Amino acid sequence: MAKKEYSFYPGCSSQKGASASNYQTSVDAMCDTLDIQLNEIPDWNCCSASIGYAEGGELPRIALTARNLALSEQANPGQDVVATCAACWLSTRESKDRLLEDSQLMKETNEALAQAGLKVQANQKIRHMVEVLIEDFGYDELGAKVTKPLEGIKIAGYVGCQTNRPFGIDGESFENPMYLDKLVETMGGEPLEAYDKKVQCCGGALAFSEPEKSQAMIKDIIESAYDHGAEMIVTPCPVCQMNTEVYQEHINKKYNTKFNMPVVYYSTLMSVAYGKGYKESGLDGQIIRAKKLEEISKR
Amino acid sequence: MADLNVAAIEKYRNNFLKEVEANVEEGEWVKMCMQCGVCSGSCPLGSAWDHPPQELFMMIRAGKREEVLTSDSMWMCTSCYNCVVRCPRGLPITHIMHGLASYALRLGLAPKNQPTRKFAVLFWENLVKTGRVNELKLGLNLYFMNGFIEGIKTALGMQKIGLGMWKTKRMSPMEFFGGHGCKDAKGLQAILKKAREIEDAKRQKFNS
Ligand code: SF4
Ligand code: SF4
Image (cartoon, rainbow over all chains, first blue to last red; front, side, top):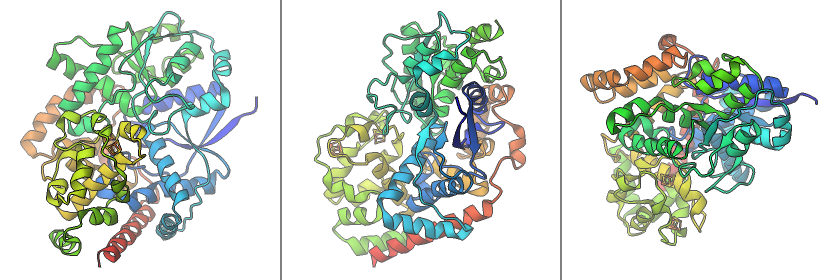
């Protein structure tokens, strides 16, 4: 199989020493096995996520994304833009759609970009890494590379919001998307039969500004995973991962629970199943250690 | 800010819907709402909204300018997109909520102590500085946004999380001294400045 190449938009949280650096580590390991080459967009900038809007307004926000697309067109012409972060994917894809549908907006955006000598066409595809896995490889091909199946581990596929709505993955339903469950199964693990908080919001950025309200929702997400027998949670989103992992102690104190549920990325599962080591799989980035995966990675 | 508000009141007098259409992102969609209420049952923090989206749309049409723009409700939007995939009329509700919040902020009408308002402004300022978000500085600013004493309390409450993040190399104290950023941060700032100018000029045109 020939190497597959994509123009890569890593996003702020994936940088060294940032909150999802372990996501990036496992993505690199997974891509190594799958022979995927990620060509980082040179000098990319923040997408402003779903929170920059208030101060940023409309055109500046779109210009942020347009700069990334323009740089991608220059350095990686003809390549699809791939993001691993849900918010990066969403805001980039949204802005691209808006630019294509509104010629006035396109004109104004290019006027702004010209300040830095850039120009955007926005005609490339914007994809989430999960789409690349499902559409360009497919479950069978992904499964064929497994050397250490995740046997006997029950894993809750927590999809959350933005890797689901509004665009959807692989044409699946918004209420009950199956792709994470299918990926778990493909890696030899056991998806949950039913998980009623699969697409529940974790609060997103409001976990910072409205901690009480968000933690009440996070509690339900974790509790439901326990109720259905899960030993760990898997997610495709850095915000979901962070929110469901790091507040468990606060929640335990407030609600008198005993949560200690590891939350990993799909790419962590895949790296381990592909025989990558503890560090390569990003397992050293778990605040709540994923012991079952550690055992497998040591085998 | 205040004069922006006065100018807008002068200009639109009794037509708040028109004002929204001209100034709020995706505001031209508001008139398409058929008041079915599906969106209002979709917000994860729904119980905290004084006026859920459907009600805000009704109030816009009824000209309840002050009540809408000073409301805390749209600041409770978590950008979950539940509403967008369910609305039978296809309204980009999430963006209208963002647009209303942003417009209220520009007019100086947004509630001063709204925590998400403060966080959103900090986030934007943080990213504009270097082109990339500095999580450490953003976090520190966030803890201290309600004043020094409050900040110490919040930071102490978050100490364990910080320690966990630091031990797993998901937070770096080095970020405090610069850290990651775009090489061409200047170019980026020039782009953003120009974009803001174009947007302001457009509003001016609508408003004159
Ligand atoms: S779901 Fe759509 S049509 Fe129904 S009330 Fe909300 S915005 Fe209006
Ligand atoms: S995106 Fe905002 S307005 Fe829409 S359902 Fe979610 S919280 Fe409510």
